Image (cartoon, rainbow, N blue to C red; front, side):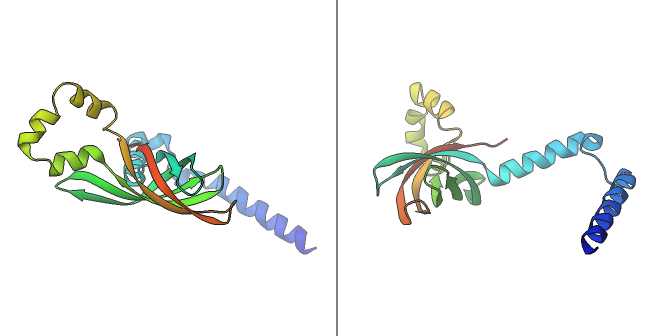
Amino acid sequence: MMLRLVVVCGLLWGMAQVVFAEEAPAVVNDAPATVTTVQAVVNALGPGFDELYNFTDGEWREGVSASLFNIKSRKLHLASIRLGYSHQDELVYNSLRLDLPGLSQRFIPDQIKGVATTGYLKTLWAGVGKYGSVGPFVGYGFDDDAVAWGLTLGGQVSF
């Protein structure tokens, strides 16, 4: 009897949501605001794909990560503290990802920048450096029940 009462109450609640659905704006009703919100979320989280080299077992792993905290100086992105997950060995990891283009723009003197941003190096920074990052990671692998640490190479998405 109690189960029937719960089911009936659930159905009534569900129908009430359908009847009064016009009160909540749909995504299509305000598409520009939705795009702006999605861009803000993506820029805040900075989702990324990582290649992890685990020093404890000497193997490469793939993982995904999101930014917990971004470190900026003079509006240049320098680094981010990230939380990630690798599905291969159920590894949860933290990493400090250094943004190479931001670091070079912020800390390399202007005399050297002129040499380092010409020709091939400029093309390399434009391709790899726009989204690429590198840094150490430390985490815990639930498959091995062991701490893992190493180096992460990867990229992150931003608008």
